[in-house]
Length: 262
Picture 1 (cartoon, rainbow, N blue to C red):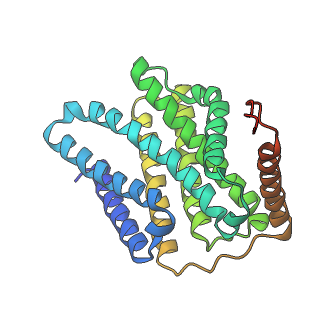
Picture 2: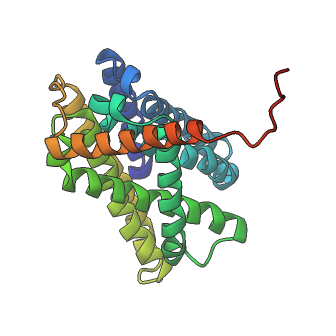
Picture 3: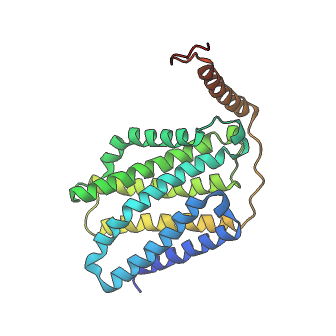
């Protein structure tokens, strides 16, 4: 078995172990999209292995076909993580908070889009460049998500034993390595065999992420703490402001003419 095939097989086994641990810990209740994402990764790895064995020439086409659903799932996972972090005080949030949160993540992606374009390798077809551009945008979003959650962990009352931060840490580590590899590819700083080893470095980093998740998910999650007083006050202000706005709108006189009562 070649080194690349061994990496693929080891990663697939690790994904299956991570999925089994998540099901055992009932993480599918808290992070269902993340469970689907890991299951999708295992399924696509098995598919890619079969394609490489039977139809090697079709591998690139199959890979790019998988990139679209994979990126959409990752976008959904980021929204799910942010929503799960707010779990202890969701009742303080105004109605429609989840769509607003999804819109904020999408807005962050639009801001990151031009920056991600600098990491796209120039030697790809226009169609492939679009897919890679979208994937690199999601990768930068994953890094931003990790940095925000880690940087504001005290305010959000989350620690390294909380599932949300464990998931974000794994995604952040893998994304940073992937972005470094993409930058080196796009600037053509490495040639020939070095390209292969750069891609292998990205695969090894993903395997390291899976290993971290196996160790993390094998332990029992600590009970989530309540938000800090500062965060609770902020959420109360948001919820109160939204409710006040709805009350004010409901008190406005109607512009429709009313019938006179005779």
